[in-house]
Length: 184
Image (cartoon, rainbow, N blue to C red):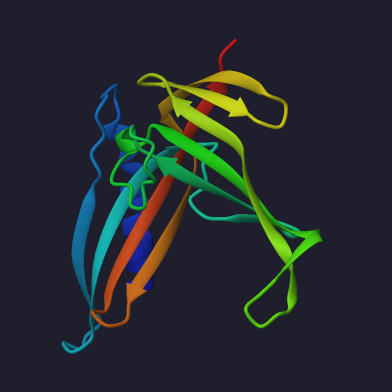
């Protein structure tokens, strides 16, 4: 019952962006708090739902391909890493990192064992240059591309649910990704 209610709430909250983004430049993060009672007063969950909007090239979690990991990091205008993003307007730069273990080169750990050298490098960087424009810099071929975003066209969504075992509070974060096209 509780999970069904959370899923319905997440779906409803995810649909709110269609009405809330009719040409507005400033986005607000919607936060909902509700109490779900399963019939026993001693057991309840306090749930907070947070909506976040990102361009479709972004992914909030790591992606793996064989032994390689791809992840994104967001930065503010001062080029400082944003660990907690309140809304999309904070983001000025996004870097995509590629990480893997180099089998050719190695190092010795604290116990003296040889281990493959971990390698991490930026493969792409996205710079926000306007309200609805990005510049993508691809370091593999040294080319840049201008991109335009369409915040009212959501192409996919996913969510993350975190339960704090001490306080029994749930944080449901819904990630909606909007369309981005290459400018000609």
